[in-house]
Length: 247
Image (cartoon, rainbow, N blue to C red; front, side, top):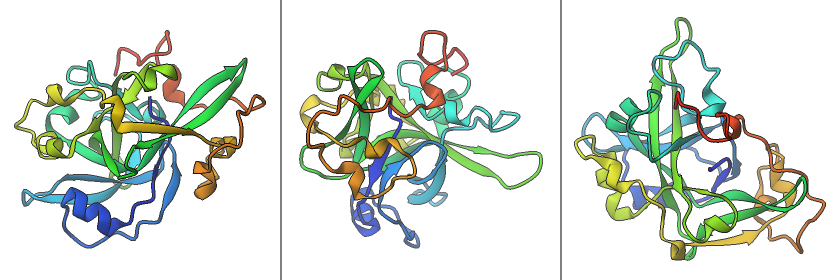
């Protein structure tokens, strides 16, 4: 599960890491990127290079009648992403890199109380989630481009808090992930636990309207009165809390 993440790295540093070309976006630091919001992704361009674009988080399948499923589609289960109707064509043809420099998870500390944690790479460097993107053409109106983040069974550091972890790609695998000629199922795996570190942060991040450095400020102490984790509709998309069979 990945329901919020951060990206505060300057665009030129992202260009150095991901090798995309084109006019730079006017990216502002984001400490609390939330579902359905626009965020940058890197994908293959028509000339065989890489480009960066702003897409909305929450994949709308090309065959969807409307956008009602978008908030359910922020994550794709890596074990079945190659065969589920909503994702299989995007997995074959439209994979992307989702740049980030941190993501959030919530630890249960008491009944109806959860403590947010911010996960980062141990060296603080930006990284890329494995993503898929899609283009939806409505009967009327503008074309909508959207993306989802692939996740898989948790590694040991995440298993203390949640049973899923986003797939974080090694830089050496960026090219393979973006290449539709490559069977990318071998790249769908949990990141090594020693890549990640986490810090307890304030429940300030729970409010999606908060998008500043306060979101990643370490919590002074455990917050037993913390409000429940912010809801995302994708969290209960199946009868057992897992992704439904459509996906």
